[in-house]
Length: 223
Ligand code: DX5
Ligand code: ZN
Image (cartoon, rainbow, N blue to C red; front, side):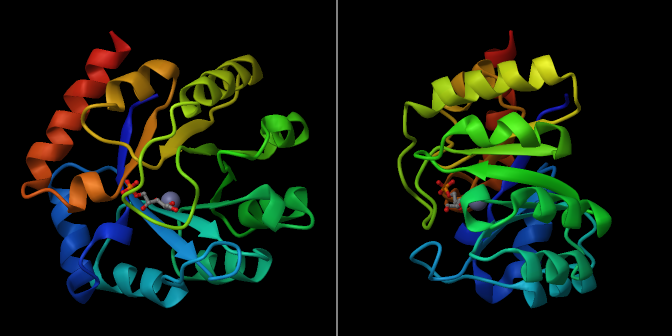
């Protein structure tokens, strides 16, 4: 699967968000990662469907990868599908009926995904893997940008890689949290194909240089 670089707009300048998104896309980003926090499931509050809709109205055509860190999830799934989301992912422990929530995402024409926090077991995948377009492994605890990569995530990524390979389905393996130029090759080697990076990209002076460096490190990891 072609590697995707997904800048997380959590670290963008929200005063000029449309331009920030266009700038990372021009610099080579593949998809836009959109972090939704509710100050309940996670201790932070961010953006909702209106902002997603505004980006579409601004002319953003790239896939938008909505990461719900909210509880519950179902009404927001509908709102984000209507607002132009491409992927909608959620944490299984935040839905009373994860299978139903995944079906809802598909019914509304979006791609579905489950997100695993560092402490969440992969056992949820046992009965749900066939419903997924994406598995998102969090390599930090959800809630904030700029945290350090948790090393045990590498083993978890390898485990998910093996599960996806044996399922023979077309499922993306995304990693989110503390992804930087200097660890992305190891993350690719462990089996990830979709790389979220917030502070590493938006905190850099030159988005093109950073994304290009990330891409060549990914290639190195896959050699
Ligand atoms: C954290 C968010 C991440 C965050 C990553 O809860 O899900 O997407 O923006 O930020 P960095 O890349 O700075 O760790
Ligand atoms: Zn995220």
